[in-house]
Each structure stands twice: as structure tokens, then as C-alpha cells.
Amino acid sequence: MGKVLDFINQEKNTIGKVYVDISYAIDNISPFLDKKTLDNRKYVNKLTSLKQYMDLLQQTEIDEKKDGVLGFINDNSRIDKLKNFKYTNGENITQLQKCSSCACLNCTAECNFDSCLGCRKGSHIEKCDHKKINITLHDSYFLDLNNDNTNTVDHYKVLATLQDEELDRKYIIIQNQHSNEEFVLYYYPGISEDTYGEITDDDEFDFINSTYENIK
Image (cartoon, rainbow, N blue to C red):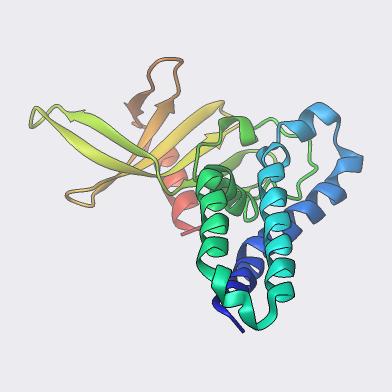
């Protein structure tokens, strides 16, 4: 097997599985959700990019097999074409990979959480109880925050955000990239700037912290 077919098989086994899982999920939930709710799901409006990529993989495989033993002549150009498409549509494809493991994927429950509307790039909802709380994990969400004690700006990775529907509150868990120390704060998303606050209630703090720890 040539390197083009090797590349295509690898993509089908990884990206192809994402496409199948999401397509199957959409078919399953469509009868139970109104069109507006369905269209708000990120994986619905981004799936076109992945379908185009799967079609391109399929056509490239056909062309490669037609060439037979001379297929190696076009190996580099064909792989470059596939990689260029994947790079150009990389943000959508990467997000769809996240969506395929999201708690919202097959969900048809009546939802009062932010769901996809509050999801950031490279994020997915790891757990949702459909009533009180859900937890979103992040791969590429960073913050620069002022340190009042040192008068410096510290760099943080956002590990998770949590939404408590019953209390109408949001929380954020961040990790200092220098010290690795983690902090649990109130989270107030704003139009132009987000703000954060200290949690002074010990029981509330412990609940949010333990909820996050339980899914790590």
C-alpha cells in the first residue's frame, strides 16, 4: 500500500469516525428537537467542512487506485492537497473532534444551560446533569490576569468552566502556568471584558471543586 492510501486510511480511522458519530447523532436527535435548537448545535453547522473532507478523501482514493503502480508519481501532490484542505478548515475539523465527545452530542433534553452558545473554540461539555450543573473543559483557553500581590501579570490556563443553573452562577477553574497553582473563582462573562470574583462560601467552593475533581 502506498503512502497516499496509508494517509487516507489513517484519516478515515480518526476523522472518519468523528464524521460517522456526528452524522449518526444528528439523525437520532433531529426528530426530537426544533430546527432552531438543532441549528444552534455547533456540530450541525460545521459538519459541511468535514463532509467535504471525507468526499475529498474518497475521490483521492479512487484516483490513486486508478493509477495503479504509477500512483507514486502523484503521491506528494495528493497528500499536499489533502493536508491543505485540512489546514484551511482546521478550526472546524478540530471543533468537530471536540463535539464528538461532548455531552450535548446525543442530548435531546430541554436545556437551560448555555450549551453550544457558550462553548469556546477547542472546548466541550464533559458532563451535564440536565438540572443543576454542567462542566466544560478547555484545551486552548488562556488568561492574563493582574496579580495584586506582586503587581505583575500572570498567565493562566483555563481548565474548566462550570454553570450552576439552580443558582444562576458560573465558575472558572484556572491554573497558573508558572506555579501550577489552581484557583476556583466566580465567572462573570461580559460583552467587552470578563470579570472574576472570590468564592467566600466554603460549602459552595467545596462543591464546585469536588465536582471538577470528580471528572478529572
